[in-house]
Length: 271
Image 1 (cartoon, rainbow, N blue to C red):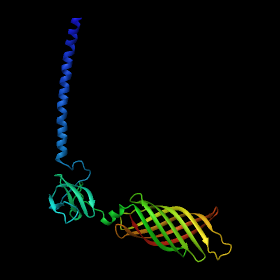
Image 2 (cartoon, rainbow, N blue to C red):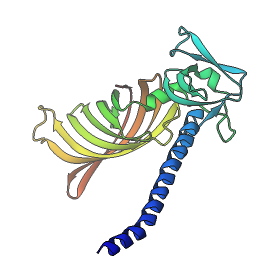
Image 3 (cartoon, rainbow, N blue to C red):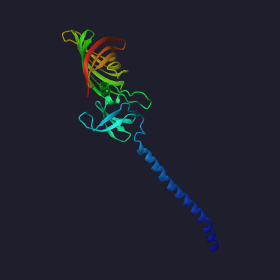
Image 4 (cartoon, rainbow, N blue to C red):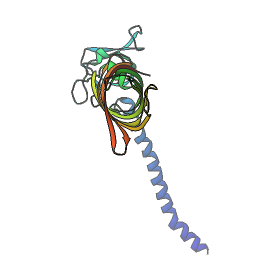
């Protein structure tokens, strides 16, 4: 039994020493790899960004805040790379290769170059603010089959080119009045232009009630479908002027429908 124990110890001892040496070598190699990666990350704070801008002017000035009243604390020289992190009105928060973070006026960034060597373009500030808005409320006045019409709408922007809009309206004619509502899906293909056309389709309800002076006339309730074509003009970041032309179809019976054309113009604003 003693001989057998000695044999086991003799066989396992070299294997244990080999495994211990391998573990020590792996443990020593891992810190050196991590240290090299950390050194690479700290040497260039812009290396992991998808878009970098290169300065082409002699220099740009970094302010401590978004405005001329804030002092300049750092000057980044030509050919240095910077990264834009956020925007406030016409000022942009940037980070330099030295990991300096400050605010630069848009005018100084318009001559910078992208990584592809192209000049950086900035969308018009007015339109950029407009496209960031979501909820809209507006009112318009016009003609509904040659009779005066008033409508109010509210919409929610789903994306830069697509929105969902709800409208209520009233038409006061000589012999009857009309109330209606509808919900439209609207698309604005060129929403980043100051003058922008839009298209919409929707469904709703239509109610026509005759004047009480008319004998034998009855109220009409019907489903309503509409298609619209219009144009918007952006005045400020919150207000726009809008004009549209709509075709309404009221399904008054299974085999009978009435068509109405309407033109309106009005003003809307975003929250």
